[in-house]
Image (cartoon, rainbow, N blue to C red; front, side, top):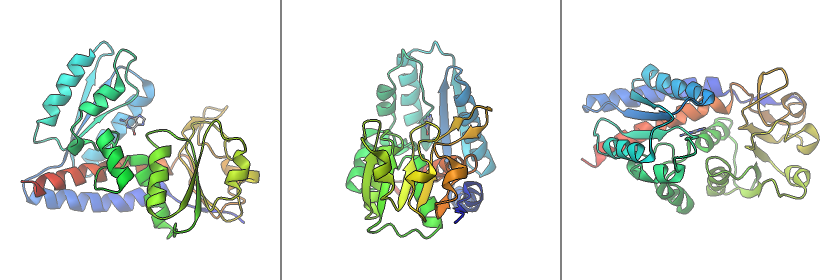
Length: 285
Ligand code: GUN
């Protein structure tokens, strides 16, 4: 069997037409959805990510501001900037690109963002809302993975989903979203004794570790759905995921490529969350 590809670029394109429509509807009510992106320092990957986020806003009718500060910015000054943005009615979403320089406590900064503008979904209020199934903002990467599963009509009820990785940004919220859809969920991590024994039972596997070849063909049940969240470089410097794509595609039913899989979906869901924040601000007027 050769797996069918879940094309994140194509799905994003489709979803971004919805984004543009919703942005137009908001503008007819006098609201232009606005995202503030804060970058501190010169992390090369952050440069690429923030530029993509700002461009996606521009391309889809959202207002965006990029605030790029030198690595020497103090935590106090960053917190003051967030307070200003929290009170700025033109800004509906605030995103502080991670990682932050070591002298800044990232948790302090994330918790300073108003939960109503937490479009990254990293605030404890957002995490708590997801935990208990209340409205809030879902972190963009797991949100995008759920949209990909939905796009192939994957019925999760009663399925066994294995999430590899337990980060606050991807692994844990991913597991909660799958649970919300009534999957039986296993979270595997660096201390898991027999990863292969777990993944071989899985109908759905989400690999989110940040390490090449965490999932190989011998670890996958025939026909399983494989979502690859990884973003790594191979020995030739080419972008690759956590999954041995060429091997696993021979066994899986569906698979996401890297690049062109989860990556574009993450940015699309950031646009969705920003729109959602703007729509909620309209409803609260
Ligand atoms: N750094 C890597 N991924 C992300 C993300 O999704 N959001 C933010 N704010 N920083 C990141």
